[in-house]
Length: 171
Image (tube, rainbow, N blue to C red; front, side, top):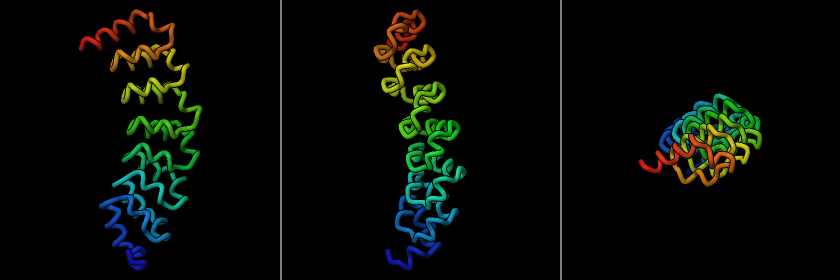
């Protein structure tokens, strides 16, 4: 687009409301305008990648992005990748966002349980310690009995888990 249009607040606002990713083409000054950035994120959370750096470290802005697309966590400031509340918000919207969390949180039981309840197949990639956690194994096999094969050996013989897997397989 014309350089003058890229700096026209009304034009850019209309554009990002249609496609959040058009924020990439906005004038640098407008990428620092909170109203424009929030409008872009409401349409596509991953537009966070094109926002001014200050917004990637702004919790309100980051949470707005995650509400629309949890995977926007990839573009957030690293402090949020280590913030359990923020990561939980991301994974509740999109379980695969856990890949962008810091290592400690990737092994957090509450977060992994939230992901497994949304996408049982994530259990395959869960931390080994969590594959030995009965609550997480139950959540996984409740959705897909075949996931029992990835559980810790100790739990493969657990009566409750076996019954849950059988009931799931029969449905």
